[in-house]
Image (tube, rainbow, N blue to C red):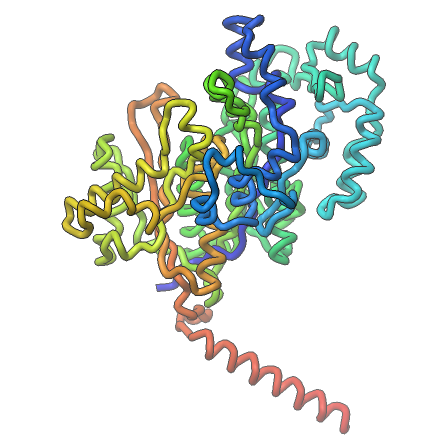
Length: 517
């Protein structure tokens, strides 16, 4: 069977600690419940610097500069073991400082709702001119900036929300409509931050993998935000806005929403579109969400833990036709949590893990690596949620014991053999299986991996529409070295090389004949 491949990946982080006090869900809660909350006053003293977030080991894993397995060899908590000499740029993407991120958000704003202060804009232009992905046209979108008095007028008289860094106003966010709550400054900033972080990630994917944006046919955006107005609050379309911003002029696109499981759903959808030959290249991407910043800040600060939820994350994966090289997506082995599955741990793991394995005749051990909810335990343990990936691995192993595929004594170490410590930032949809795809693709290409399973889970009950849980999984396998011709015949990688060599010889022969004549 002809299977699509994972052709490229991108992963980025943007430091956004300064946006937490205005735009996060925890800040809004404090404003509504107790505007003078002590923890909000103490928040600035618990925030990390940009150098600290760059040196934080899980962040380096996220951008591809460390293998997730290396985290096991570091002492915990990881924030007490910074990496010396760490760089903001990695194999998969980058970590962007917050002033640049605010500039990036401005470049994503086509309705001029973000206004930046003049001197701040001047500084940004100089800083971003050194960035490899910011050309003159992109920098020009920053415009010239506003005088501080003008910004104060917009804030005090036009209900704009200030943008502040280190206690100074560097800009503001205007409302998109006079009374539409879905176009308020807070929502406008949330949506533009999601768009901008996805754009940054996609630009990294294109640049680092030599992909022409005009070759992209379709974009699927799968974050947790929903853009719209009061008549269609989730109407979208992030995907087409992102396609426009990255220069994918031949693409259209749409948004997929399913809480944390949305990225896994989106990749399965993309694979189906490619396998059916509707499109050749489908880009799946998701920006981050400001609402998730500092979600567990109270618990962290109460235990003298730095506020680690200070990053806006993005990911992008390019799904393409089989090239005989990159890892394939086994579209015939999709795990599904159906309406009738149930919500018990055993039912969930059975539907997402063992049912697709049984279809292929595989055992639990036949999957080299499982990528589950890769939540960072530095974040979840102080918040009382324990080690989420480890709990998932134990559930898989326990089911293996019940199926008589694994010994009881192996349950405790199953995660070490078939999984990883969690490294993903708490951004809802970002941790759910997806962070490993970049590392997996590199491992496949290096002949270090034969088979991996990506498991996405989601909490649909959060929307108050259903009590249903959600989940979907898919298996990646090493490419057998076959590509498909137009007539459907499969040819091997060696045959492709022979065909290319033959064409080169014919070309050289023709060139010599032309010269002689």
